[in-house]
Length: 397
Ligand SMILES: *Cc1c(COP(=O)(O)O)cnc(C)c1O
Image (cartoon, rainbow, N blue to C red; front, side, top):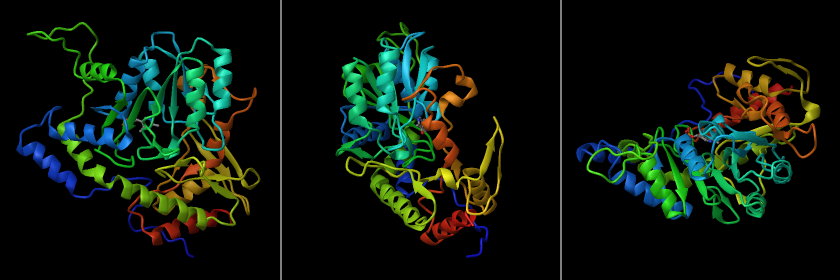
């Protein structure tokens, strides 16, 4: 197949709208609830609780705000250690530092590309006073949640689940976003459903939900004037944004079904290539397949060099690397993305502790070096995806 550039750009994961969003936004306008109060907010909080199976949901301006509130609820104080997923988006970890906590990065396992329970157990041996763990379900694939939850309860630690990428994914039949004491989801523009922006804090603790309602609206006390006893934030979601989310929620399962088709079309399309897809435990979990990713076998990697800000490679017959594939995709007008660069490799977090299963092991750095995210846009046609597959195959010629 000739590698002809796409006429329209093929995105990694762009918003997919359905029309109902406009109805609910219009409703906010027509009723003049152009504020952080209104029926859309109430409705999506109800719908999220019902979907995820938790008691309370508080709609916020973004997933990062939800994580910040979760970190505050968990009681993180300056200098407190927090065990964090290492291979993730910076938004997982930054809220710890907003509270002047001390993130300690836990290495990744190869089975689901999430926090390694063995490394977590090791971290508790090294830092026994740690009381908070933040675990992600990367790219929509549930982590080893049974093991992570068991380790947290054994050590009396609070689990914060960052389910920003995994809304609708299940682990042993239970929805992600319900495993932590405090949980965060996101409605950012490229997530499985979107409000253009937005997020939510989910919990079964009524007092916690009440605190987040207060903190996120500038911490007003019950008084005739603006009375403040606690630090406040302007983190509440707009009722207009909530209208977009409300219009999207009925389409969550349909989005997941389409993402799943994309994943399996890639899997089949790459048969015979020295690559594998981002893995999951088929006996325990059903991902939401938010992003399809690929991992190149070690012996099929051509030479790839990454400095702090630049990437290059030396092409070699029969081999390839993420840089070559990403550049080839980009030259054809298709958007891929490197794997999240692990936090312990980020200049801002250099010098912070990193715990892996054995000294010197670094699974996150390995997946970062050999993996990439493929175009996973719901609006990509099967024919367009065949072309993406052909482009990837051509890199191994
Ligand atoms: C998107 C994302 C967030 C942050 O969500 P925002 O709504 O963009 O603030 C946090 N963690 C992970 C893993 C994410 O992918």
